[in-house]
Length: 236
Image 1 (tube, one colour):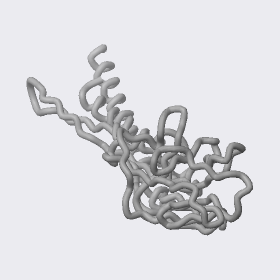
Image 2 (image 1 turned 180 degrees about the vertical axis):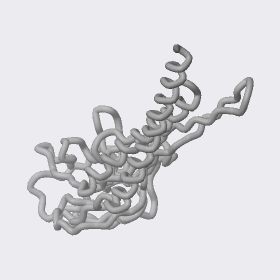
Image 3 (image 1 turned 120 degrees about the vertical axis):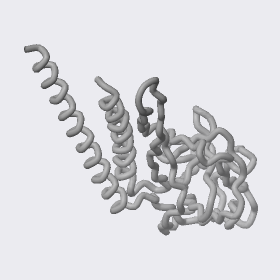
C-alpha cells in the first residue's frame, strides 16, 4: 500500500474511534451525571527524503465536556446534585475516582455508597457516615450533612488539577493524575444532575462522521481498483 492509502487508513481509524465515542454518548443520554466525550484529532507530519512531506491524522485523543447539565428534582434525601464546578470523590478498588452522579444510599454499616456499592468520601477523604436510626437528614449548600440539627460530615467537592488528565473509567466515573478541592460550587439535596449530552447535536455529528467514513472507504476502494488495474496491465 502506498502513502496515500496509509494516510487514509489513519483517518478511517480515527473516525471509527469517534463513532464509538458518539455511540457511547447517545447510549447515556438519560444517565444521571454522565459527561459527554469527544475525540481530538492530531496531525503527524513526516518529512520525506524526496518530494513533499506526508501528513497523517490520528484520532487518539479524548476530551470530556464539563459543561453544566440541567437538574431534576427527586425529593430523595440522599440524592445530591452539584451546581457549578467540581466532582464527588468516590473510593473504588482502583483508587479514588471522580463522578458527577449523585445517587447514594446508606449501606448496612451506615456509609453512603453509590449504586455499585462504592463509598462516597468527605472533604478529608474519609467515608461519609450516617448512623442508623437518626432523624431527618439535611444537607446545606456547602455539603454539610446534619441529622436533627447535629452535623455529621461535610461532603467534599473535588476537581482535576489538569482537566485534560481526566480519563473515563466506567459509567460516570473518571480518574485524574491529581485532584484538588473545588471552590464556589453549590450542593443541592433532593436533585440529580442530568446527562449533558445534547441528542440532536450528537446524532447530527454521528451522520457527519458516517458520511466522512464512507467517503474515505470509497477512496480506498477506488485506489485498490487502480492498483489492481496497473498490476494486470503490467502482467500482460
